Image (tube, rainbow, N blue to C red; front, top):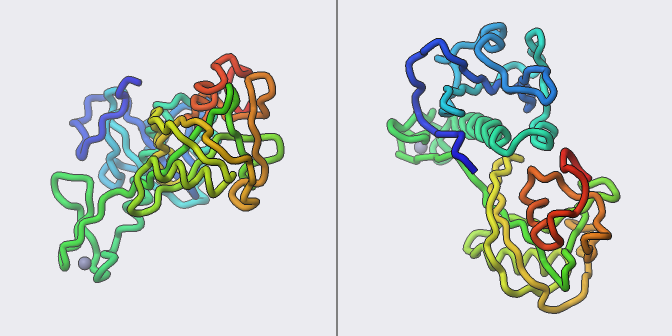
Length: 280
Ligand SMILES: [Zn+2]
């Protein structure tokens, strides 16, 4: 994937070209009401009374500066614009645009949670030269948090193991995922999560690829592995339904913009189903 997003700490001098604004209100992002929705620009920010010196600078997106800011949850959207949930946008947007919006949302959350030192409650300051907040009293430095999680496709004779989280409506299933525990390798997390959630043992655990997942601050690290023993026995809490699925028997699975879908395609073939604009 091309590196459309270049993180940096301070914006270039204004040159009259486009400036993107990732404005959030109550967790929703301001977008231009096109189909698909597009990122808001300077004029929309100006209509809301926003200026770069009050915003957090995110970096360069396709060579253009990007700012982010949270506004009142009840702020009206400027004409031609609307507030959209990030998860819904991610289902229709390119991965690169989703990464940008996710990065902005995570930076805002990090700044909001680090106004005061977690050790001594002194107001935090920006740490010069890096994306970090520092306590002037005790020296604690807080970096933006990323929470690693594994996402794993278990293969068995051309079939993939899919499960349904209680958060999914009936009929929608995906590969298994879970957060890394302190002191654990990623491979150990894969084996533990699969064992805990569906009671299956796995082998040949191999790195696949990764995807930032800003709900709220995960990095999904994808793995493939092979079934090594055990039959499915769901835990009934994190997974309420699970099974082995071949290319001709797939339930509704996540869209192609997600690492979950790419993992499924890797095991059962990319001809699976549908064009991939949403759950298919
Ligand atoms: Zn402190």
